[in-house]
Length: 515
Ligand code: SGN
Ligand code: CA
Image (cartoon, rainbow, N blue to C red; front, side):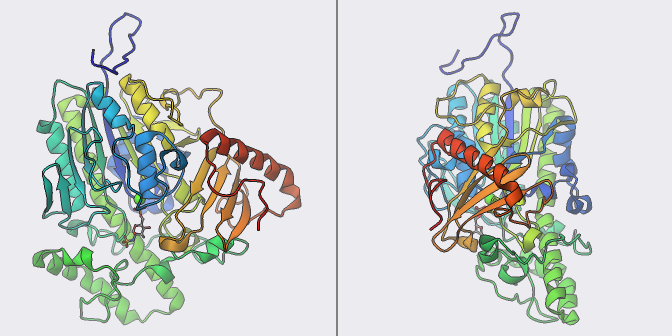
């Protein structure tokens, strides 16, 4: 057996066949936009193919990240460690491709490995341990993106999501070493900003009116960091770049477009088709001369139409991969995971983007199928976090990981057993300030009932406390509520314990004075 392949023997003394792993991760895909999670928005924009995974296997209803930002989350996925431990705390850091990551461990244990799509940790994944890879440059572009491969970099005509699916299928069908089990990472750029759907989906939701979240016009009372952010749909989205609004009726000229790169890359034919498909909708908006509040709601609708439009191609891509696995019979011995690098706000608190510990950002979807090992339709409520992915894949592949892993395999959970000592609460730490969207640095802990948060930037330095049972939308900071002081003290203890457990000394000590 190959080095590192600590494959357990089963009761008959034979080595069970190691499963293949298909890990599909999109970028900024809110659980609210996956119909298996049954949100109001997703009822109007279903994801039938992603839902197949939940139907075939399990859906985790309390899945979280430890730092709701792309780079840190991806580094956690690969290393099984929290941001402070792997060191990639904010976007723009450079990932050290030589540190321990599970894809290399699987490669060394005899797996064929590949990565396609968004990487965003370093220039390329050279040295990570992938037999094959093709990645988008940095954040990646939706249309005609730059693609970096072991041979260099080039502009490829096409739509990023479709290209990522195409590369993945090519590798699965004919690119890999078929004598080995495989692990493939399919990392979609969609639905990341600036939310550009494929032309075939550009009008898909144009006529649809999505339910506006009840707290869309949040006043942020008692929550200074929530008030100070710059991720408000009606105030901070760029009308051209994000919302694709035009300057006047009868023209396709966009309003303020801070980063024109996304459109400049289109071919003339793509641009002409885009303009044609958007014209009537934009003309109606310009003709309506909307008032402030009406415009704010219109912007939410346009945001949803575009964001969900990009997900349509992701869902098709997931369907194509699942179809191939089924047609080839590979599905029987293949674990398929669908997740996102973090959650995202779809208008809750008036927001897009993520970063905050508040629910919609801290949560991330997690769906998994593994025929014969997960009962179809399983729902798991135990809290999981992205530190758990690496230990899970290692256990499935029968490979021993290093002692530095900070998560725990999900295998017992999806097999229907929650270990008695499974975690009861989840740690969180966001660092990137100053940065895009002006979300102040903070850390905190979330239990099934409460959430305790410490913001610690120079200008905003406060505690917040939420009762998720009575206030699931986190509108009322109860930190000064005399009736909750016992629970707050208890959560502070948990926060100290979790900071110790993960070795996180960044930021002020939990008992440090506020100023
Ligand atoms: C870009 C986006 C931001 C986003 C960051 C991080 N602006 O800078 O809105 O918060 O990425 O996103 S954009 O208009 O240039 O897309 S992350 O998913 O990579 O962490
Ligand atoms: Ca992201």
